[in-house]
Length: 533
Image (cartoon, rainbow, N blue to C red; front, top):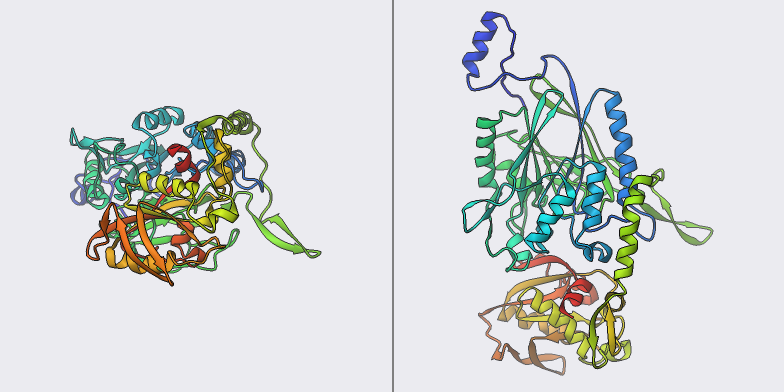
């Protein structure tokens, strides 16, 4: 972006011309005609993956090794580094969830994160837990569009300022407006998620009046939707960039949609992108937009040059963090690294290993006690409604305040015996880490949906377990549908839940992910069942 500046020492005629054209601009610390190298490293949608997975992929320890190496390289070349996150650190892995993401935030502090956007999953826990997480992290949690209803004031820090060798960089945070419907209502009862496009104009005005930054970045948790086609979701990063004057934001580091933002051409994703291949970030209205998929699978690296008010991209990469691919060798399928293996940092391992062990130990802690058996055996749950199938469906229904719930029997993998129940028992029942989705449909649409789902054959994983609804299924037809004690009204709107696997068409269910009323909450099924029990 081209900006107008005045310098401290200039010939009188030039000084006067600059003062006339830019009378509101302050003097700046950067030197004219000097090239400042700025590297922005970024991740998003971490979701509890502080530890590597069973294949040795990603994890904070390998990420630290990678980041430390880049910092050393950039420093040797006289440049500066910012490390930013697009949010959603919480929710996804039991070892992290059980510890309120303490290892994740303390690990990010060790890695030297500079700031992050508040994601919707930061509100899966209480505000007291979120405050504790801020203390563990020690870096700013940013969101300019979250307000406290009772006071009318911003609830969180809107922006932070960095001095990169004389280049003043402001980083603003924004959070998706959809957060209110993705979390428990009680948690956000006194919180308002305002339109980021409107709030961006306000905070930019504040910044230019109070701070006069040379560059303005945004860390967002709003989602990237090509050509601003956000469908049922709240508007995302592209809409934000287009809502402002050209180049008012120099860079958006995003999250929420959990994808690598690699463009084949303007407004079209590169569908051929694979780990280790080239990635061209999006650019909209003079604003670069980046996102690094999810879980720390990649470290995004954007190298820029700032010179005389111009901010230009030199190179961009999504660096795989020990990702692997399947290959066939001597007739056997093997997993091999897509790039050179990144060693785990010993300091990070020393910090995180006790948490991993503690989390594993807590999986064996009792969470409930049963007087009777919860039936989930394959030869039962795939043939008839069972108490465990209905319990899971009920847990989903209550978590999102739905009218009824649909649960595929293929997602029920075991029974739970009488006596003490541990989280490990729950994970045995639901090991796939599916998420809970819901959709709002008219009664007429519901009947059409049930005509497919409720008639799925027995002895298959598609056979559905239900909660909150009654119906008659006979000769492949559905009739006499009753919800909440009332006959189905074709004009009324109903909300029901279904696992994301089935919402996307799994088991032959109707695909509903493009329905205008569809929402993927991100709540993991096993965690929801654990909380319910």
